[in-house]
Image (cartoon, rainbow, N blue to C red; front, side, top):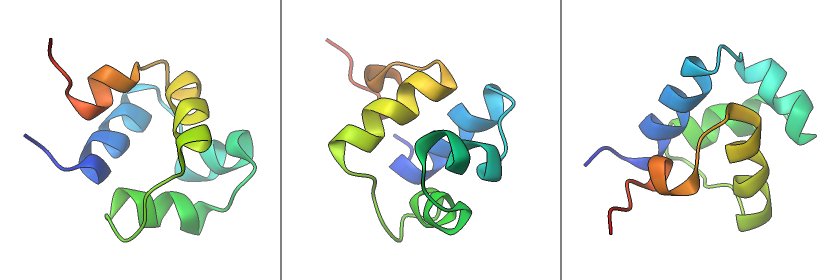
Length: 67
């Protein structure tokens, strides 16, 4: 299982979105995105939901939840 930061980065890159573009979409900073992707911080639940929408991925996919 990959760490959350790696999964966030993969989802963002798969969507063809830069850290700067994602920061604008989420009304945050590029530094915040970088911190999430390097596992220094984690987005809050609301922001995580918006992030999933922005990159076109489900929370299940990013969190690797399998039922």
